[in-house]
Length: 541
Image (cartoon, rainbow, N blue to C red):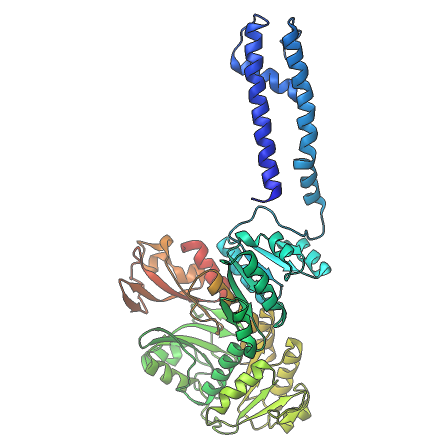
């Protein structure tokens, strides 16, 4: 309980105590000193009227000196209580109502998550927290940024996240978790301060450089995440999968039952077909549960929708079934060697290159700054630089640029030089994913989404099976659907999500049919994009 809450509680306790004492005395005085006994409710009415200075009711005047003294004391006490209410209740309310800048402390919040810094990944996490009803506090050390967040409706305080005073002002003693995401040098300092104040708080630290992860652990981090490294591995997996049907970056749901995404290559036999026309299930056994079309996810897929070179299929099945589906998504004229270009050699790009170096595939790298791992020095948005890197003859390019605007521009240039190339792109902000698809990217993975989901899985203690894919998979119960079949619950049409598996009594039912009835205690594996998952949880969890 913070100071303001305590003062309010004390004030109300004093008011109730004073009024109760006056009621008892007044009721006794009217009977004993005035000789006019009356019901208790009448004494309550007179005391309230006197203390609030609105009048004395119908009992005035009083003949005994004792009653006159008592009534005078009641009137004076009323004035004291009214003036005491100004600093305790009235002034803070007006301050909150008219304040346009972030405060330096927060009140009346417990079991919350403290976010040291704010950015795209925190935005994703805040959406997850808000949907679950979990409170949060952002600590922002830039006054202008803090004020902007405050006026935008965020719970934010202005202060230095390394400061014990600031962390206490964010009520760290009562927090459930703390996320340190300032920078690689500052985060350990934040963690040390946090451990000093609350040794039991759960702490998560994000690092740009994976090599510094141990320092964060030494400082007390329970979890250290390097989202860029994870994103690089995911993008590399997509690049390798472009050539090798067996190199599928799938999420295992159960033994020999996976879910995976498949970008369609130009020249794939599926181009121009609908799901019904393609006969995917009859030919492979894999079930298509959704499709990305120009950055928009459709589940169930529209029957009339035709696949094009920008489509990404989402399917479930055994490893062998998904391998067969992968073959159908590849171009018959695909290259097998020397086909990959990696543009941008930061943490993500270096991770992609490292993953590719462990395969049989050759690759060419582009970066603005020369280095031992850079083959072509230059701007990946410039046509001459792209030509020098062999983009005209390449089969795949992985764009890992740190700026989304540059990535969009580069995608246009790449499409002009090689319309058939497979373009895999890193997006820094989730809102730019659809723009990159419209620019011509084949597959886009958002760094903000990867980071936010990973943080949410830790903070909310939920099993998010796919932090590194466009699609989100969660394992959850669904009390709102217990007793209903999947057809009756109509989960797919109501939420856009698909129940891909159900765990019951230790066994897993994969691809449950429409007649499958959900029972109490069932754990559902649900697939969908972020907003669809949120819709599912709001209706059924």
